[in-house]
Image (tube, rainbow, N blue to C red; front, side, top):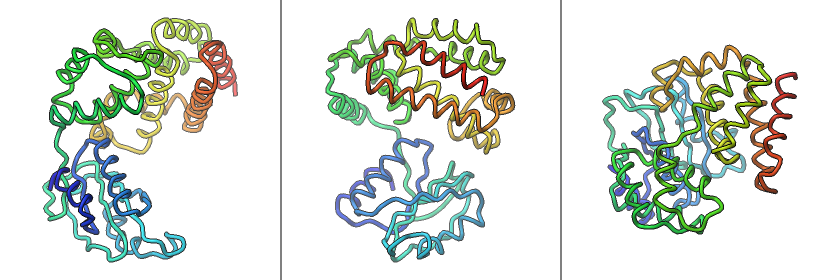
Length: 304
């Protein structure tokens, strides 16, 4: 089945007790996981599965009283960290099981859900939805520019771009085609990679110069988002081989492995937490003094 047929089952309250999500579009999978939860009024319990032996214990997990408090029924989101090539799991009577692999390889099952790339109308509706919840407007030329650039890409790419665009225009009520073009063309990632390289070397002067350069063109919210994303990729790659990382959309695997080697795992997590604290600071005040606060936090982190 496709996502439209799954949506129909949700709307008609005719949900099966087992689904296999076959797609690399993590955003659509996350969206439909939430829709199933809302439609069934069941809470989601995510279980990380690293091999087939663990996968075939999922039927036991589905009825385990130890796993679920108060014997409440749940949606068991089995997040597979490997390619699925075979499936032989029976539907649970009590809980909904959703098998969510990195990739499906020649898997045959009546309950497979294949998520297709969004149509033009779906892209338009998604843009309208994001604008509505952000209380922003967009001219038609800007919207068409987005459609032209993302009509052949997964929803995850579109969602990430719109989040970046909304951060870039956070002080504006109306988004223009110039805003869209700048977000498509300009990327501060290279400067952030330089910053990370200097952090690894503990080159304080270069770190401070990098921060000053980045914030000439990039709002602190965008910096935090991109920097956090890069650090999280490095943390994830500590658990994955190159093929698994690529299937998750993580390119430049060697770069992230080198980050792990040069900055230990705990220090990476500490830095992510620092960025999270700075994000809360931004949301509770304004960007004034952010550069200096970031420099102080990084200096303390390097010397901890």
